[in-house]
Image (cartoon, rainbow, N blue to C red; front, side):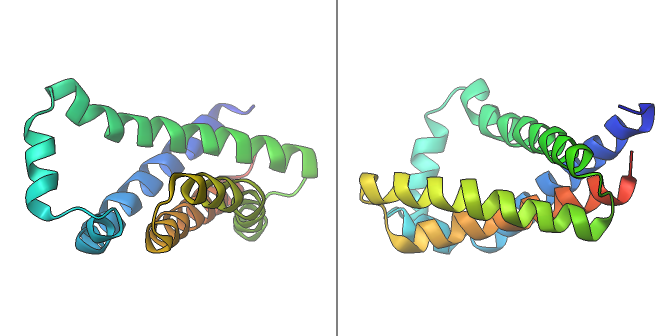
Length: 140
């Protein structure tokens, strides 16, 4: 791995994390409704959490995005194709084969609403496209 590669992966993780913040802020009321919760319920649940419990999902989101960047880099190394387009396509394939299937199956077993599956899987599709495109454009 070239020294600048980690920088590209880090930038991709930051971009994906920022996208997620914007996406879920914009769709917050729909996301809560898809979970069957009201804003008041969510606020009460959040208020009852420790500072660590409040921060942990945000930290995990960033770490997860960084790991996705590492994996997409590995996929592109094996394919020998580095470009924004190749990275974005790799992201779409990973999403379709692993994320869409896993989230859909887990939510079906848990009896969650299809609207929640749609909101969350579209988020992950965009995240993987962003990460793949940045890592692919950064090159190796």
